[in-house]
Length: 93
Image 1 (cartoon, helix red, strand yellow):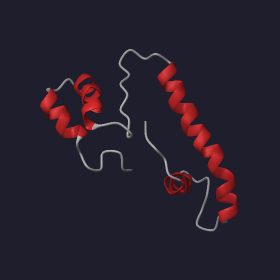
Image 2: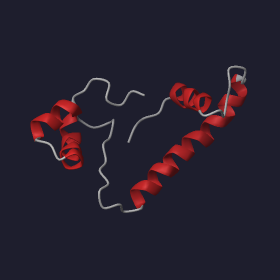
Image 3: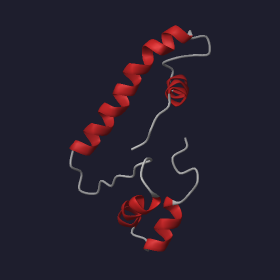
């Protein structure tokens, strides 16, 4: 899980062609709720699918809480997973 700022969502909309350099602020502001809902909807669908090997990392929790997901997903020792979880820009695009 990740917290998505308006700036991030606008940049993403530009990357995928939903908006461009000349898209007005008003249009972007109208698009943001739809884009934000879509991201949440897709995340919920993945989580609800019940995939056997689905692990969840969250931006809003401590590195310690994310370490177990990394251990399971990568099948690596706890100390190495902790190093990864403590990466300063882990959730930066």
